[in-house]
Image (tube, rainbow, N blue to C red):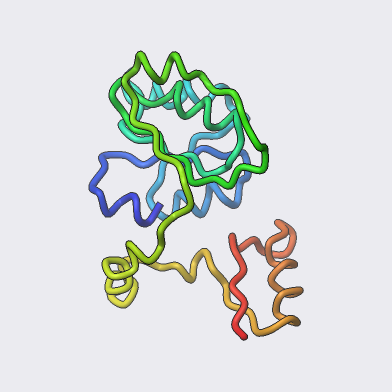
Length: 163
């Protein structure tokens, strides 16, 4: 969410069913779209005047959200998938993507490519990765970090272990 705002969008939407993640996304300036309130494609279209978002970032790494991303994005838009897929293959609406003239991007984030631009923004306080990554020390910290990932343990997003 934080990085998305660097591109100057009018709106950033966060689609999820988990309350604490939607709350965190809202704190970062996203408009929550709740999966338990209906079809996310229809909700996104309604929120964009029937057009669909210009760009959809799919972060789950599963066939259903990838398909929904293709269905939701506007014609001529971009779907970027950074979710880690465990399936060796998947089906998706290739015909719809083709006739909507979509740009599809997939792959592991090339973090080194973006570090030079992002680190100064962290130093200036414009990006706050600590809100998502909580550092823990060594192996003992790993157990603490995993407890923190559970909703009843105060969810934090991701655990970063320091040697």
